[in-house]
Length: 394
Image 1 (cartoon, rainbow, N blue to C red):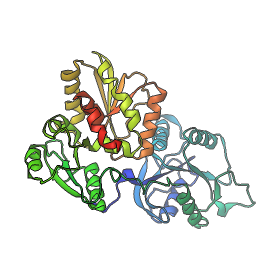
Image 2 (image 1 turned 30 degrees about the vertical axis):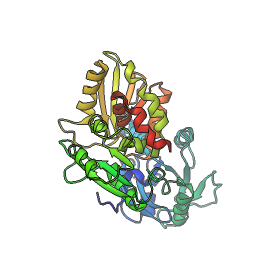
Image 3 (image 1 turned 180 degrees about the horizontal axis):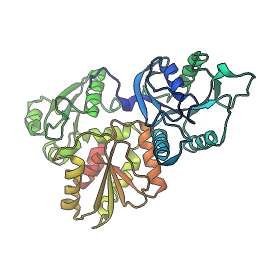
Image 4 (image 1 turned 90 degrees about the vertical axis):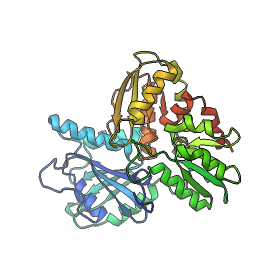
């Protein structure tokens, strides 16, 4: 990924919902100014989520999501509706597209109820305005548009700008704990599970923010950390490590040098840190046979020494002394029934939006299942969670 690009997880996600042939795909194409979605006179043409990262003024970087018709029928229809529900989990803004001539029916009301239950900011786009023969009363947060003629499409974009999360571009990862001129060591292991030819998104974002702060970033692998520390004239202001080498790194970094992980920094950045710390308390209570879900937000190819499939289960067995029954999920494949799990261990969610991660946490809370992320779990199991949180207490 180019460091000048905006990652998907940091873009505002706008999802379009509605009945088959309400004109969702046509409106998506009108909003984006390109043929992003398939358009057909045959109802139910869209069968999966269609996503496109792009720039939309005045909002900036966004991901546009076109969804299947919510009123679809049969087995294939159920799968399409499931995809539409998945989109609600990741969206920051929802657009309910209604055929102005047909009006709001039971399907639209069902979608609206779901959006309101999730407290998801939404717009009701009364489409096909060009075909109306008489005026209509707009619902709350409603706008009459025409995907065919483009009427009020610009006004719809303006509504996106007003409804977007206000602080998404202003939040900082570590600017409040690192100052201009500070030296920060980033420990970035390169092993069989590292993406070839690049560093992962959290590391990119931290490096970029350190440059913006005018702090000095020193990047090394865990095998070079000791000599890197010795080469510095003064101790670093902070050491940030990849979670999988937390145990090794904490033995090398002097106790008076602040130490944390990329995963912990991003949990704070996305507003989920306190919830995930609570989830860490359950790790020590795990017993043989307890069901544990290990969930990842991305769909990267797992290597033999993958942190989620090999290392974390290994540490639970060797450090905690338990052999739970593990289940794994990745990408959007987050289980519907969470109540069967004793604990969910989630990745750092670097490719997920804050909305998507908080939605998963809310679902887990409703099911009474605690959640911890990789970095906090690893720090807890190695007995260094308290130390890794100290730098955030400034």
